Image (cartoon, rainbow, N blue to C red; front, side):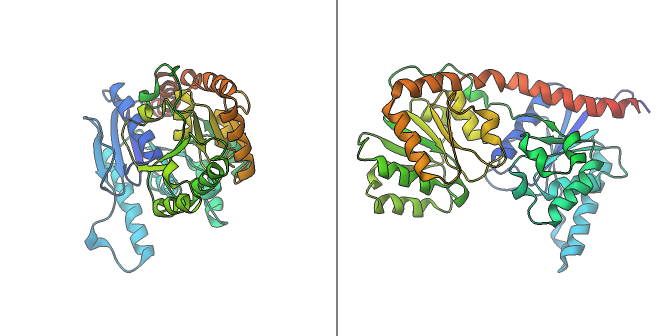
Length: 373
């Protein structure tokens, strides 16, 4: 039945708005759809400190059950969370809800059953990490066909899921942060190598520091600056000291205005073991930095770069390959800058107005089916 006198209503469902890649994507999309005249509701399980702020006009709903409802049984608690989420969809009646990350997708598909809300699930990270073991992939392949839509970020991700899910899935990229939509810096480069990311084992900053230490004698003027924080901050600082490059490895923590901090650097490194499509890598390419990045299993790197054209791609965990790639670019600034000038072209491909339009067209196609039922 066609609805009369009611605009389109989109909901987003995620664990929290704690500052991270997926959270930023959801907030950016919510802001875009609000500006386009859609009604937008942000549903999160929790409210945490240091969250992204929501623009005016976007409703915020917390889906976690009250403390008095929590019991000693995980099964009972889970069922109560499902019921509360189901009641949220019944109360607010969004036409479509977009969810992401692991079990959130499962909960969205299950709780929208019996409502007028159409669920769209998205896989934003490495699929094998979001759905580990044997049970999680089985549940994904069982439940995802009941979703109105499935969004992946890389072509390789299709291979993880069943053929039925893979055929239905669409690839939608993340848009570029508008702060990085500006002309490339063409002045003299600082003798600085940069990286941006949380300091955890997955980012493999240890390999980066070890490779830098090995080349430190050949390039004594260079410093390595790693922006970010995390549980390995102290370990990485001590490692740099032990390797004799403590004074040349800078760990300033989380900083504002990343674009301004990195735009004059000579080289950007991404050494992660796994990523979905790295926002930090997108931003480094858009800045026009010469880039070396690992070929993460999800295909996120090759989705953004072509080896030898707009950056260098190395195998995951291969320190020797990293050293050779760093030596090649530091030793040949002309070649490095040629890669950087090609890299900046990603601004055209991932410009916010272009990418947001793709998301809008996809969402509208989901909702128009509902409006015409």
